[in-house]
Length: 356
Image (cartoon, one colour):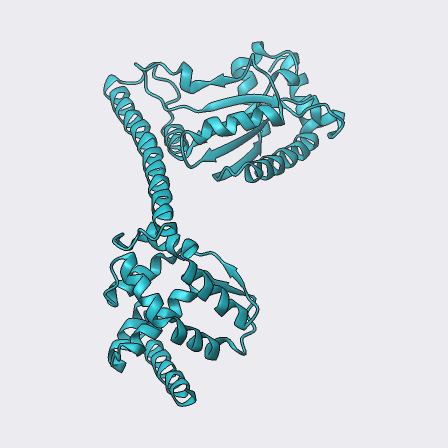
């Protein structure tokens, strides 16, 4: 290693603590900013280049660097997005958070040679803004931010593990295999975006139908059931009334687990569900009241109305005990516990009947 490279290594060792502090600041800033912007991502990661890794880089490409300032990836951060179009949303956010080194920033997606293999991401070279918020020893350091989708990240991780960083010197059959896989991943990325958009459009349409009381023929599925719980006036009133029993807050959860239970009760459409609400709300509340009156809970799930409506349906339709056990076993998955819950339910129902 020549004297210039040795000097860079000395700078590196003297600056490691600064880069560690910078990494924590950048990681926290990214997480907070992404959350504030409403952009859900799979992960925000960062790492400081190891001493050995920098030494190998200088041995290979030392002529490119005059000082440590020229090595722009001592700190590297990575944002892994769920969807490929979120990469561009995150990129816009980077423009407002950091000072962009346009000369060294590379959108490898745009520069990708279609005849070669590869599935690449967006690489920013940035620094913190010198606006008085950060110490000078941090604002003068450049670092790299990679933005990629989950599938792009998968490609990069496998590609790195296989050791093929370039198509040059790679056998043609392997190059072709890489190209086919890269093409499949790009198609999959596009399809995931299309599916997400289709689900979003469907959710909006279901929400509109529920608001206008036009959803009776809509089949119960994960989306329609969730939107019904969110938007139907009678269901919302029941959930709020149940929550008032123990002054609980409502925590929204996915009601998907109730689809099988509703199918057991032969409830297949939103109209079927609406009929169940109209027929069973009073008993559902009474069951909840008996169950929760001495509860110490702070939170109740948004599906709590469904829980007691289903049980009220079982009782009002005179399901035999063995069928009630069978129903409860769908969610409990323990026949002994299901039997105990069924017996408690019957006991509570008998108490309510006597009181009324």
